[in-house]
Image (cartoon, rainbow, N blue to C red; front, top):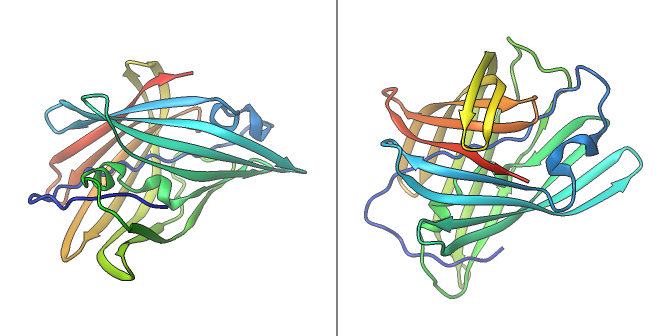
Length: 239
């Protein structure tokens, strides 16, 4: 992948840790899940701690392939700022084998952090990350896998900046009803801890996510190590 950047003076991370997980308490085909269908679109809006919109990310499923029980989807994520200008885009894979979903860790990185840079020639990504798997039949009390990803921004063979994101202590803690511009959803609630590094700057904190039908993130909140809200992310359109 290739992108263009300009380093800002202030560093602030809003963790947009948007996961796709599927629970099969009843028999369910992989393609029954909306984002595993070609042309599906999920739109998310990012807000700062005061509730002011900062950007919108559109996740569009551009390709779906099947090989026996394995279904793979390629999803394009496009970040648009409040002036409707595209600031970043990338692609990631989601796989499903007999209901067991796996997602590229690049999906969980903060796209807004990558969007903070303007055009610069010859800047490329070098990505080293996990593929997270999510078990069938998730329920309250279950613990989910840890994950990590490292992204190096290289120019002309030199590493300019190294970014890393680790998530751990993920667990399902209950159910709650959540309302967003896309509707009202009865969700599973998931908590987690994270640490992130941007160059020499380290940030630690925690987060909460809500999933509809164990398949679609409805809302995600991020907190600093003192427990104060950093920002949040919620679904605003499904089609």
